[in-house]
Amino acid sequence: MSFKSSLKNLKKLNLSFYPIEEIRHLIDEIGFAGTATIIILPGDYIMRARRNVDNQSFKNTKEISYKPAHLNDNFYRASTPKTTMFYGSVIPHQFQIGDIDRLKLSTFFETSTIKVSNSLVEESFTFGLWQVIESFQVVLIATREDFMEGNPHIHNLGQDKVYVVFNNLTEEQKEKNNELSKFYTSEFLKTQIQAEYSYLHAALFTEYILSKKFSGVYYPSTRTEYGSFNIAIHPETVNSCMNLVKAIECTVYIKNGIALIDNKLECKPDSNGNLMFKPLKNSNEHFGREKSLEIIDRLRSTSINSK
Image (cartoon, rainbow, N blue to C red; front, top):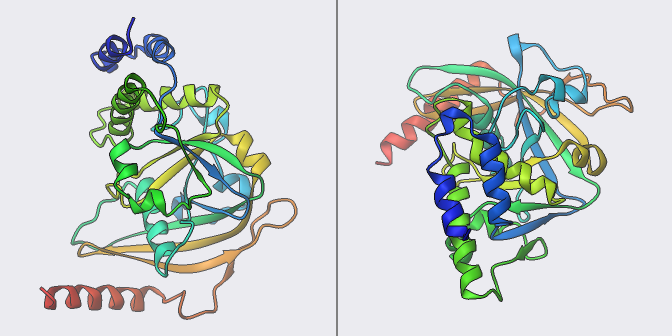
């Protein structure tokens, strides 16, 4: 069966029936597809967000890392009940001032269930900063056009990281690559989520990627519409190639369409991975609730006056 026929069959499946084995079979028939693979290098940093339930602080590194396998019983964007994953965002290779806060907001919006509105909402989150100590390779989920037309969030990774696989291909291979890249990019960008079955294509393709000995996938953020990229990493890679170097507990305030992160507590894990948070003393990083809301109102006023 040609890849076009297999892809057509894949697209027309009724996901609400959970045709898991049929999807796996068709993915195997089609074979590997990806516009590029990316090397995550030693010294790179990856950020992950976890919501503080009932404003309780986390006590150990494991609590802010990937979900334990026995608690992973659903399909998500890049994971299956069979395989839990570590979700985070890579700090840009050549980051600018403000990139870190934007990355925090990206990971926050990917994790939080609250919506941007005119009403004041606030939520407590902990951001973990992991440093890569051993290189690993992930698959980039993006179309050829995104890559070739200079998407800054792809090119900002650094030329030493990206291995392009759509060069020097036959026309038939290019066509296959392009069609499959478009399909899987649309699946990873899917925002209309009826139920967990909406994630089946993306989750089972990630499972296939892992079977090919890649460590995970690098894919567009649905909440920022390509404004940033997320990474999903297999737990074995997290354990062997990454170390938590810092954790910051924050309150995220959202009002009048403006989000602000107020850093409150921070810590470095001890040798056993325990977390003992202490207050931040730098007033440039910790504002407090009253000042945070004043800043949001000031930003809102500036935005209105500039129109």
